Image 1 (cartoon, rainbow, N blue to C red):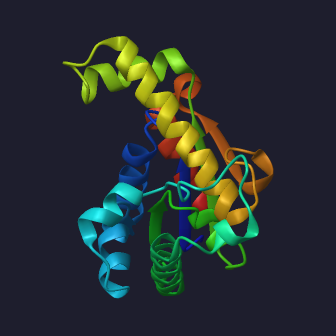
Image 2: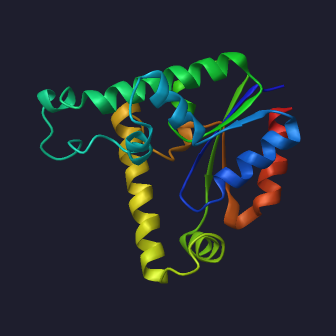
Image 3: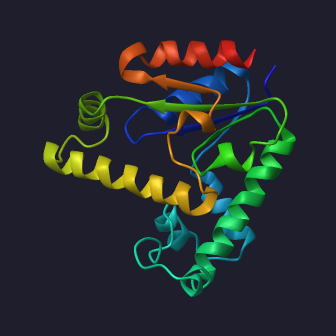
Length: 194
C-alpha cells in the first residue's frame, strides 16, 4: 500500500477535489493550503503574505535573471525551505495525500509513494470553474485566471525543482479528468495506491 500520495494539477482540473476524496476513501490525512500556514509559522513569517506567494516563483525569476538575483529573495527562499521541511515531516509520518507545492519532487525519494498529475482540457476546466467557483466572473477573466495560475505553477516548479511542470516523467500516473471523469480518477488513484 502506498502511504504517500502527491497530486499535482492544472488549475481547474479538480486536483483538490480528487485529492480530498482519495484521502477520505483511504482514511489518509489531506494537506493542501494549510501547508502554507504551517510553513509560514515555522519560519516566523507573515501568514497572509505567504499565502500570496503560494506556488509562485520569486518575481525576479525569468528573463535576465542573474546569480545575484537568485539570492536576493530571502523571504521566498526561507518560506519554500520551511514548506519543504513541513512536507518532508508529513511524508515521514505517511498515510497522507498532499496536493501541489512540488510535493512530488520533494518526496520523490520516499518509498511507498505515488505521484499523480491531474490535467483536463481547457474548455472543461473553464466550465467547471465558472459553475463552481467563479459564477459572477466573465468567462474571459476565468480563462485569463486559469492561464495565469498555470504559468505561475510552471515557473514555481522550474525554479525550485529544475523540472517541467506536468511532464509525465515526474509522475507515476497522469490522468485527464475531462476524459475519464472525477470519480474514475479517484478510483484509479485508490486502486494504484493499493
